[in-house]
Amino acid sequence: MDKVFNLVGGGQYIALKGIDLQIKKGEFVSLIGHSGCGKSTLLNMVSGFQTPTTGEVRLQTRRITEPGPDRMVVFQNYCLLPWMTAFDNVYLAVDEVYPEKSKAEKSAIAREHLEMVGLGEAMYKRPTQLSGGMKQRVAIARALAIRPQVLILDEPFGALDALTREELQDELLAIWREHRVTVLMITHEIDEALYLADRLVMMTNGPAAKIGEVLDIPFDRPRDREKIMEDQTYYDLRNYALDFLYRRYAHDDVD
Image 1 (cartoon, rainbow, N blue to C red):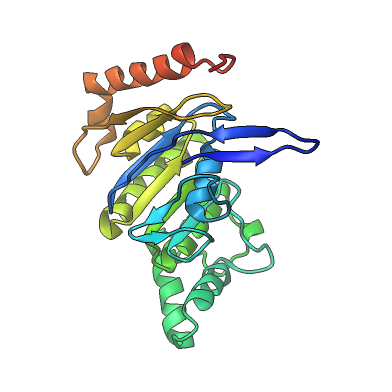
Image 2 (cartoon, rainbow, N blue to C red):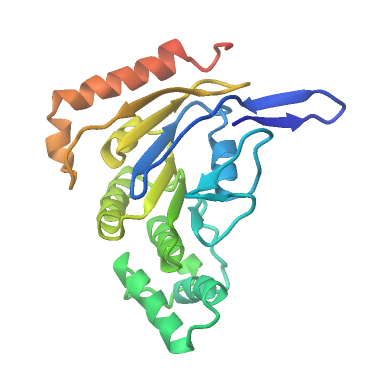
């Protein structure tokens, strides 16, 4: 799969070249690479916001050509409607996807998912009354409430402090373990990817970025952060990924 953009004034920019990636149902895959390597472009094509120039994206047997409720995106900046409560933000999404359900059913779904992310006591607060971590919990609840086949995470914890980030990572794993939704996550954090994912997909630099290597992450589930941090395999994988990103594909390299 390739993605080529036409430039203003003529010429073309090859963002992605020869992308070939299969993700199993229920798998958690992290995508990592330097800024400008095409991670977001790849995410946009999986989400249906953009289409490949050559090749295709498929969900099971269906070709992806536009956004749909079977693929939900959680962005770094939350994307909540500020005049609505947390409950209303989730309810609005459920109402859009399931218009045939009764108001009581849709309300129950919204409440269930807000309680699932620990916001049972804060669901009637507006985003301005919530911390960054709480806003991201609302965004995750909204995405999961419509029961997508694929959850797409675009650096969801990048704007949070370290402690809140770790808390949400653990909550995400608990939710994923229960629902087993397929997850594709973009991150800049190697440690985050190694803790969360089944596989780590490492991108080369652009233009014409491609998948450089894919690391299998062998740690048992459910994940134990302390146990992983004591495992030499963790440091071997971490050092290998660091070598890939900062020596073999340093940001100022030219492919």
